[in-house]
Length: 131
Image 1: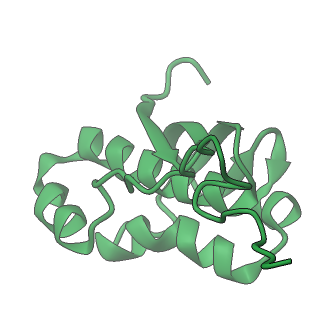
Image 2 (image 1 turned 180 degrees about the vertical axis):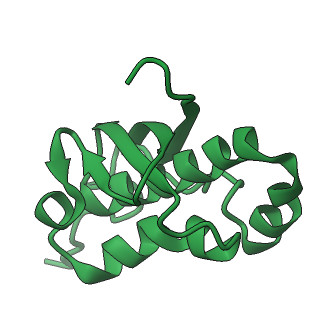
């Protein structure tokens, strides 16, 4: 397997991070040593992960090996999508305009807001009672 060429990309979404390797192959996706359907469990998340391949018409040409860390399942799926998009740039730079237009190369900046003092959560204050 070491003689095959590998393309690497790191993806981020919320608190999740994904290290993604693309290897020329049949299109199998392995996440943390498990199959994609077994790990994600939701069809919507599976389509989310496969979006970059469909955008640049290379579906079924690369095997995906991903290691994810942090966050939840949905955040990890978004991080894998971001990592796949960045790894595809190593395959060919002609894919950049398409991936950029779809928004797959942009790191989603939305993260959980910190809790403030004097409040119950980030914005929610304590319940007010007149008496």
